[in-house]
Length: 158
Ligand SMILES: [Fe+2]
Ligand SMILES: [Fe+2]
Image 1 (cartoon, rainbow, N blue to C red):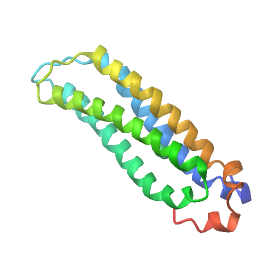
Image 2 (image 1 turned 180 degrees about the horizontal axis):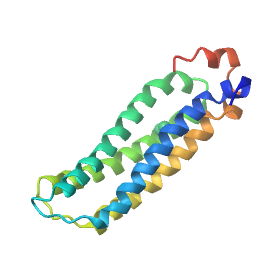
Image 3 (image 1 turned 60 degrees about the horizontal axis):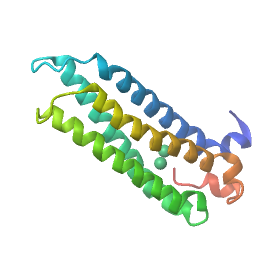
Image 4 (image 1 turned 30 degrees about the vertical axis):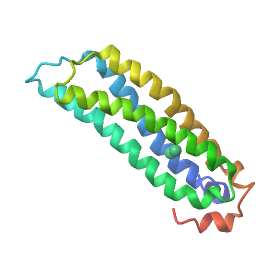
C-alpha cells in the first residue's frame, strides 16, 4: 500500500507478517504432532522436536524485542502498557510449559504423547493468538492516529 495510509500502517503490516508466520508455524507443528513416531533412531522425530523448540525460541525473541520497542510507545499508548505486558507474561507461562515438555521428550525423560503436546498447545494458542490480534489492533493506523503525528511515526526507530 502506498501513500500516507501505508506509512501510518507500516508497523501494523510489518507485525502482521511476523504474526502470520508464527501462526502458520504453530499450526504446522500442531498438525504434525500426531504423525510422529518417537523411535529412538528416528531422524524425522528429532527434526520435529527441534522445529517445535525453534518456534518457542522465535516467539521469545519476538516478545523480548517488542518489550524493548514498545517501552517508548507505551508512554503514550495505554494499549501497549499493563494489559500488553500481562498478555506477554501469559504467553511466557504457556511457552514454559511447552518447552519443558519438548525438552523432557528430547532428553527421553518423558515418553512422547501427541495428545499431551496438543493439550499444552491448545492452552498456548488461546493466549498467543488472542494477544497477536490485540497487538495488531494496537498498531493499526487508526489507533496510532489517536496518539501520534505522522511525522513522529516516521521517526520511530523501527
Ligand atoms: Fe508481535
Ligand atoms: Fe506481543
